[in-house]
Length: 99
Image (cartoon, rainbow, N blue to C red; front, side, top):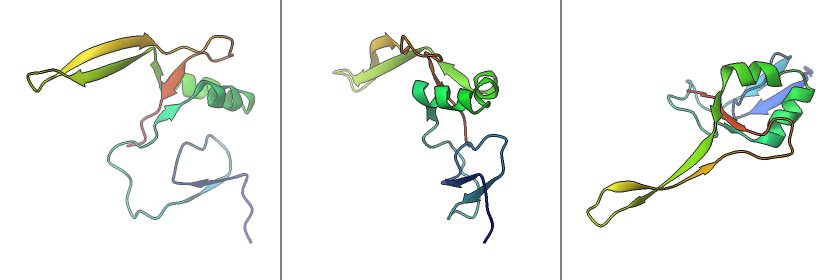
């Protein structure tokens, strides 16, 4: 049996370590899925030494925007809120395109 440091099921980001990907699709996805990286996950990745790399290559999420339909069948910006978690080493969330 082979040994690996990390087994990733679903082909998410795995960092610069020995890993194996198990994926049922025969080709890469065209658009990302579950692209968000939460603050607590970033703290863990920083402790493993890959957080700085992700912060340099990922897109930082500064705000969340909520949209709702209006009476004319269009969508309008409803609300904008800051996306920051105070008290954490990496207070912002990130997205990393997988597509």
